[in-house]
Image (cartoon, rainbow, N blue to C red; front, side, top):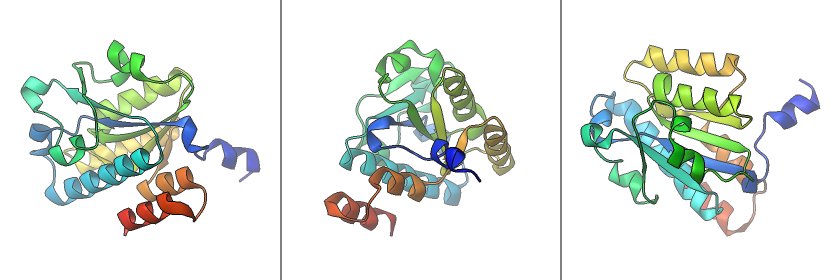
Length: 188
């Protein structure tokens, strides 16, 4: 693999990133596989806590909260107010687009469902010129095959599929300092 491709596919300094947690809501979580959901919630929490330590802005959305409920409390404790939406792609919600900081070209996406809202958001943001990363161990669908298919489709479209530890350690860059110690404890 050539050096240019390696640089293109890696997260730049943490000052370039924006974390987006998509629709991890109570009623939607109730129809997910319990073990897979526990892993996704844990990894979303790690991403949120690392982002907070490194001053990386985090947004979260809620798809039709009247019907699907609020964001899980274990995640919402690390977040501000949600952006409500009814469109599947976050990019179609003007409040979402208004909160994205233009000086942060990289978007790290996690949440649910991988084959619907995560997929459509990733493809739309990529088409708008953003560099999009989808965290494979922090996304889920009701059907495991749908999640796998979405990740394959995203990768084929040029979206970078990564994992929680890669994201947080690329944000860190070095194995030193208090943030490194705290994040290391999170991923144990």
